[in-house]
Length: 85
Image 1 (cartoon, rainbow, N blue to C red):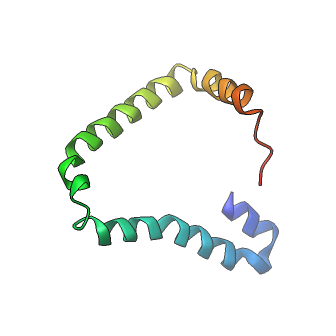
Image 2: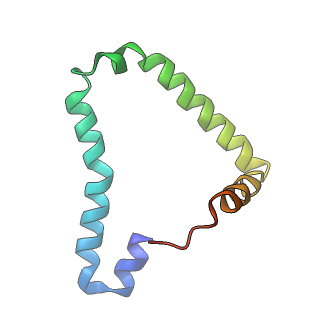
């Protein structure tokens, strides 16, 4: 989406890609900086990894069986749809 936006508006392409890259990278840098200071993350890292892995497996199964569309439709009905920012 960012590349398409940059392609349709070449003057702002560098700004869009820079903002996208920073928005993606900054949380990882912040987490890496504070990981040693937040002991509960280190304590429960193994549990969090297993929960995250389980969520990835469930998401993969939902995508494979084409059930993700039903979940998406449920959330659209629940929250009234999303029209963008």
